[in-house]
Length: 494
Image (cartoon, rainbow, N blue to C red; front, side):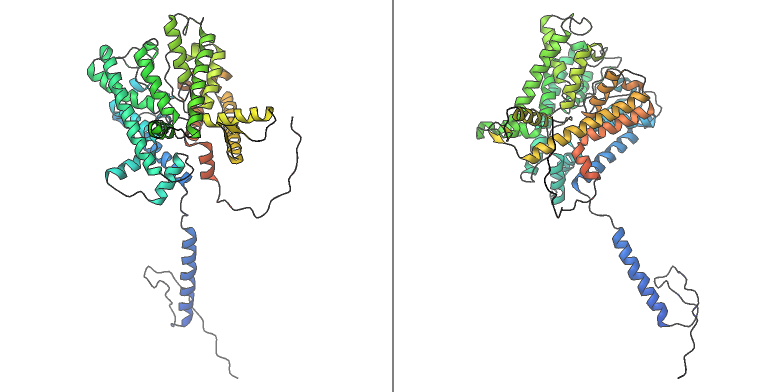
């Protein structure tokens, strides 16, 4: 049998034509086979390289990051600075992060450093960051009568920490109505009051700006300008109108939109949800207890409330009790307070506001669950019961996890800053807790932070605003269901 001679093939070359495999020798079926094989293989590889659909937590993280970067670019523009020169990148990034995360910590004075354009950029970031970029996107959808898709509802559910999508669009509609109405009313009152000090046009601008800042628990203010001689609200420490309106804005923004919706519906439903009962009771308890402790510790401190009349002492004590609930403005010098008061404010800041609000911290509901768990354990009971409702174990585990992770974050950042910043430990702890809880109160450390300190505090604000659980879900790989369970074991405790 005669063997056929082997055919020699020349090199196949890539070409920029659709049929890019061209042979320089005689055409055979081999070239077509190679071409078909590589095209099929390439198609499979391209499919594998396609991005997986983003989860709601990942969308929230990416959305906030994009807004922060956009705000940084706008604040770096020369006409955003009062000097006409660009703000350094790290300072613009810090300010944008602080505004978007509704914190209020600043490395440069907002009123004197930025022009009106820069200040408007900051207050817009506050509004977007406070209500959430998905809420603002939903507002645009309402304006243009666009349908809210299923994925958008899932992201909204994650943003407001809801258990289901049921009624989520209705809740967002209420959030927008409540927010704009409350801010408008407060802006009118502020404008009338400040007209006597600043003139109508300046008072109107200040009124709108600070109403948005305080309702969103941001802590930014413009009272470092030449036109307004006061730093923060220290000049209005005993002014009842300013104090009452500011505290009302902070509390309303901090209790959460779910609670506000329940409270408004109470007239028709005659009942409150368990969530609303817990939030309202714990919020009231913390405000009264905080005011009492601050009043006792600072009563004889002439650098804070010691020189005020009795009414001023009470008013200032209540304001400093409300402000750590992730708000930021202050009517007394925080750095001049006694260390006992400062440490107690650290505790208040760590607890923070309530779920579904504009504030941060571990939240009042988490703190309530922890206290209820301690009481239940001491009493030797098995079930944790609040307002005659038994709590599920997953709620308890989530509360413990959130608290421990938050505590670990605050401790680690404090330890790192204690090695890079030349300051007292309590001062650093106060600053870190304020950043994590998106409060904005400061003992004066922020303007003196190193570049590393600014970056670390910015990251802490970002984590605090998004929520540690949301951030963890966004960074973790795809969850796989466990196919087995290990045997139960016992560990001696106590």
